[in-house]
Image (cartoon, rainbow, N blue to C red; front, side, top):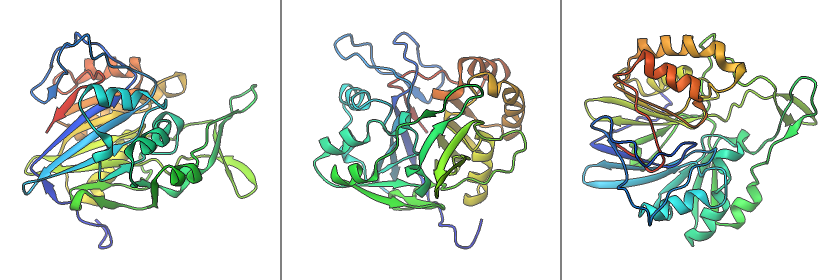
Length: 312
């Protein structure tokens, strides 16, 4: 841990409620002691979409701190699910963007507009780059750009932080740009960003995670997509916090699609060495990778569905 890295303080408890994920199944029961499923209620249906958002509550020293991580793909899914679950995202102290991709930021403007007051939006500076996907033999596909001007107009106070920082009175750490040291985690081939006056390979350096230190039990690492690699993400969280034990890993691991098939096995092998007590792969992890995680680490893995709360 660098002497310039802020220190993360231990929390007594954390509750992470998944507001947006790719998968929902109202009949999945609780699988471990930490996953609390929403009650069966046909009058309060939840929605799933290709996106990610979670509402984080941290309890420490008799106080509660709320943080919203990402806002999903569409303008309405996250707000709909939050309302059905009795959560008011506007209560959050800050919104953290795991990166600038549209399936993590699509609901931001609508959320800010409904909040009725200004909210800090913490992001890496590169989250606002123009981006596209270049596939061999096809025309490039431009991705929706995160609009800083619109965010400010709708009530977002943008805080650009490239390095580690803390929120929630020091009880939640935002990693900032993650070191890439694991040889098999090589980013997302074909992604490009417009930098200066040209398109260049996009290493998605704005990819970041949030980290909570549960008193006496270790780190909970929450990733959005883990474009830096989920193993890189965990290792960097351990480095900047100075804490080795990992209690839980939650979020997207980005192992979906043919390009990432060769990465699945080494990722599982490295995860076994880290040995988190709980693993919750979701969003862009991909069905194949999720199933292989469950086969390799059945005692640790939990199948997520939208609306589930994880209590650490």
